[in-house]
Length: 396
Image (tube, rainbow, N blue to C red; front, side, top):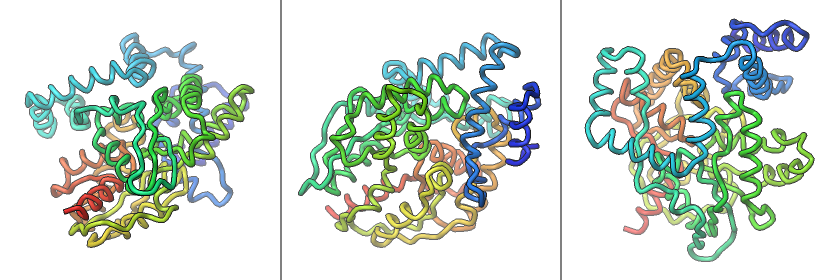
């Protein structure tokens, strides 16, 4: 019942009038929603959309028949409806994260977690991200000119948590786009894309966030809208489906989605600036599920890695198998997630590489946890960060 066909069978029964039960919610909740089955399905079944719709239906049912505890409801409301949508709260949370790490408490908790002294709390402590000050929020609203001749004008969506935990990645993304003849606009009105909300069954809230991002960007003024987060990109490209029943936004959402590009997709599709210095690194690549399966993009990141002088690439066995991050799956289904991660790290070790390249911040956090628990001091880097490093190397 936890196979794709088993879950579809259950969805059909519910659609035909069978009651939603705790067992059904557990089967749907245990799904990674990695969409790997979509790549394997010869009939093109939109399983990911079905799971998201099922989770939205479950959320409606739960509020009436099986409400969460008051603490769980309050925490969930705070995270999804306030924290992810507030620059102020994210900045405050980032400052707390920075103090948590700088004080040494983070290292202590992780050490106790590895020794199993904190139980489940220690397992979650292994996943705590690092703050990356200064945060990227102060760059939102700015326009960055192209370096050399301008060939493109693009909008960059900086995300939500990424502004706090991946500020340097966002900066590297802007620099690489500039190096490739892009004027980069970081629109002021942008915010959380709603991907985590969709994955968690909060469809109406995701629709509200989609409208906000659509209103923030005048699509006609840009050659592309860029994201460096594969998980976000998959949802951003599906805004047309998310708002298909909204007469005011359906056409706008279609125009928005038509210009959405993952940063690796965009860069691999243009004449890449070849002025890069050599990187004496051995690198393997982990496919992000929502890039490989959700967006059907596999070759673009590998093409970019192949363009870096001196970089030695080694393919990982099962590179398109999920790392276990899957949105907030590693938090709500931590034990299962850690088992998946352990297998992923065995595949990484077999490559003997020193860098794990990725294209999604959530995957990067998960893989960094894997390196701490099972790895050999590998570095986890976004593909764009490797390009940025190569461009910097050419200036030495």
